[in-house]
Amino acid sequence: MSRNKPSKRFMRGPAFHSLVAGAVACVMLSALSGCAIPQLCCAKRGAPLPEDFVGTTTAENSAQIGIEEFFDDQTLTQLMAQGLQANQELRIRNQEIRIASNEIMARRGAYLPFVSVGARGGMERTSKFTPLGAAEEQLTYPVGGKFPDPLPNVGLTANLFWRIDIWRELRNARDAAMQRYVEAVEVRNYYVTQLVAEIAEKYYELAALDKRLVYLNQTIEIQKQSLEVAKAQKEAARGTELPVQRFLAEVRKNESQLLIVRQQIIETENRINFLVGRFPQPVERTGWDFVTLDSQVLAVGVPAQLLSNRRDIRAAEREIAASGLDVLVARARFYPRFDISAGIGYEAFNPRYLFDPGAFIANAAGELVAPLINKAAIRADYLNANARQLQAIYDYQRTVLNAYTEVVNSMTKVENYRRSVQVKQGQVAALEQSVSVASDLFNNARPEVEYMDVLFAQRDLLEARTDLIETKQQQLSAIVSAYQALGGGYLWSTTGLTWLDVYCEPLLIQPDEVIMPPMPEDAIELPEPAQADMPMPPMPPGQPMAPVAPMAAPMVEPMPVAPPVDMSLQPASVDPIWSQNPPPAAPNQPVGYFQPAAYQQPAGYPQPVVIENPLRY
Figure 1 (spheres, rainbow, N blue to C red):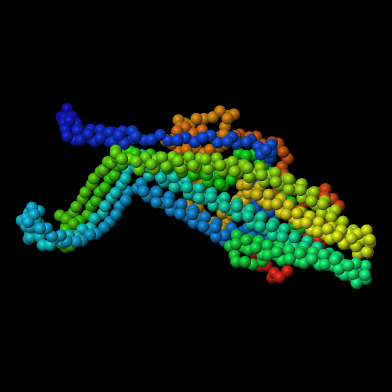
Figure 2: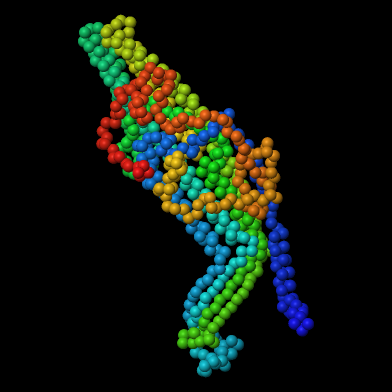
């Protein structure tokens, strides 16, 4: 019984009352500071994600095919390998990742105690005509003697400051930084797919310009032969000066166009050089027939696969998570803040007494502060965080919608332009025959054929060939765009090797290690399965926003289709238009249809330097 009496007296004493008063004050501060938190807006529903691409789904997905297997052109993949090593924009994106990792480091240290060590020295003189100065005149230090005037002061202290993260403000800021780190990684990876696609498009554009150069040279040679025939007919008094001048004008026009095409070749080569991070120089290209290059199969998969294959969608998803955590950080500023400060050290007027036990000093204090009046700035930051969160949600919806649209546009463009190329090949074949017939009749001075017939036939053939090249280039560009729109261009090889495994520094945090915060059940309105909208990533736990309808990805069963035979860019060997012509002997080999099989390098260029691809060895 005697042991309980002191505890009873203690619970009824001043310490107990102080503890109760502190608890009541803390509760009142929390209630008063948090009662005026404004209401937030909610996001509107997004458009439903279709279950297929305009009626098309496949069991396979071309996004899972590696760069080497899809393009199947060692010269092109060498350019891509050099671009992934030396592209300046890619290096800038890598530094963005490093900046984001440093932000994580800073946020991690914010919720830990801060300890500092310092030394100070100085002097002070107090007026003797003040109470403090008069009292100091009567004081002596412990060893004996008067304090000097003016009074020196030296000290050596260690100080601690610690903000207790009661409302997870600092830890939520750390988690938001980690989400933005992963976002920076995904943005960089998305640029990789864009870089691969642009190098491929410019490479095929270069091949198209080479083909135009060949056709222009062939047309100029044919027109020069017709010009010589017209001159001979004039000298034999069987013609006039008019055909000579018309053929000469046509030759000069095409010679002028030849120079323009050569300039376009130089600019396209230099764009490729810029993308691969080197100064202007000739660009090597494979000697296949440009017109026969085709894609056998493009597997689009199902729309839900875009959410994992498209890096821009994954980056937008991380931004939603980070912006939701920012809302929690802004909300915590309405509540009390608890800070602890402490310090220990030595202080004396003379350095020889500095480490004397009597010179030891120490202090400790706790501070509880809450905003009560004039919280306009905090309220504005809170509402701005909510607005940025809504922006992130709408940006995610827009990114998904844009990705789906890109796939549909590219997919339909590949098919329509492929059919257009087949029709134009038949047109070119007919015009080639007409030029041959008209030239033979004109050369034999047949009266039923005038020089205008030959001139128009040659002009129509050149225009048809030019249209064929441009259409073919658009088809190949659509193939590359479809590959990139599906999320392809990140895997270097179908075996699973990525460009990061060879060229990139190791990441501070792997994206899979940063878990998406779950959506609280009381903060959303779950839709019915039949009304599931476009997928939206979940918000952080305790998300203080009004109900937001999630956009769950539809569960789509792939249609049972036969697996693709070949999904790489290869010369097509089976085509009705080519049934009367020999098929290519091997991939990336020229087919002699409009020109000799030998590849013609543009005149005036030195031999390019072959860049070995380190990924192949």
